[in-house]
Length: 467
Image 1: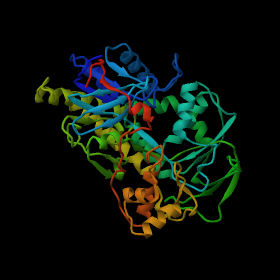
Image 2 (image 1 turned 30 degrees about the vertical axis):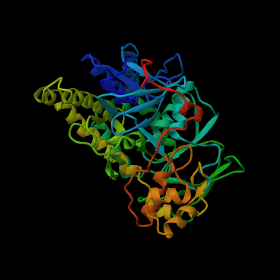
Image 3 (image 1 turned 90 degrees about the vertical axis):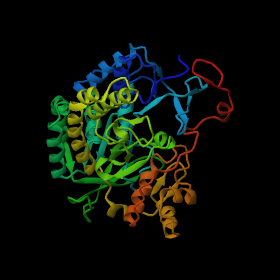
Image 4 (image 1 turned 120 degrees about the horizontal axis):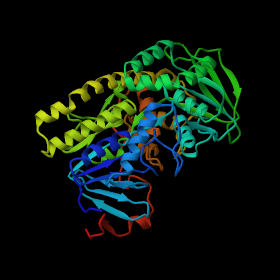
């Protein structure tokens, strides 16, 4: 391992792998940091030592990229957590053996993907309720279903993707509830068909998608979960075209396992700790990194690829990875501007189409602020610290109108997940009360829960030399 690296890439998903493989061709010292067991990110997951089969072309294309990455000479730190970073690009990583290593690269590419968010409802924190993302992780890493049957609900596209994977593994879907309006479905479909990658994926999934849609109960959302220390049933209701609950249409269904997905939010904790500025744009997926035409952030020689600048799926992530790689080469003066323009011209055209799809998807996953206002006051918002809506509301009535001030008052965001789930829910509550906070929840080192004994241990460079 080298002491110094030209480029450090945080994240080994589509964007990170694509960027690293391209940069390797220019004899640069590259290090990829990732929390996963294997490269491939959330989309490409498989049981340790095997590779899942899939009919989806993008998935198999991803497996091919992973194979090339694994055969490369790129330094890959898997099962490793970035726990500190500053504006000087000093990075502290906890490796899988719990040792602490310092890295000081010339350039950084953030390719950390996104995480799932769920529109809260009373009882959503009961055991037996999982996100569709967690469902996908379990399916792909085990290679098989983990229950006799499952109820799936949500809006956007995540619950469809999860349902397809469940059927691929031979699972049975008890019920499928879709909160999307018909017009949004057509917009998503027409936008997806304009992309060759998404079009191929849709055709590959068409039989399962038809099966899901034929049995789907449309314009319905989960409004409550019931059970004695575990999920036993859910209350659902019909909604209108704007997502408002139609009173009098409520009904109950018995189920012991519910997978629910409403949308995604970019992972930005590490980037904001490095001093990168954010912007809030509903059309791009909410809070994202502010970037220039090179996909460079507000911090010099730090770049953003994939969901961190706009949540648009695997094809956009690959395009961003390539663009960032060429931007790094340009900034390092390994290619001139004319060559850079030539190499990226078509990529930016493809990216524009991918962003159009991203905007359609973002519109489908926005929270209904009217329903947020009407949530039961005892609905949990911060699961780590057991903070309820009434606690957030009391803080707002006290005069606190930002995520970070509410964090200090209520401890919402101070638990193990550091606000990864509740910060966006608090933002939605603030919006429902007429307060538009566009800031990022502040994160302090260590950025991941880390044992005090590990923090007190010696820090060295990757090659073992002393700092």
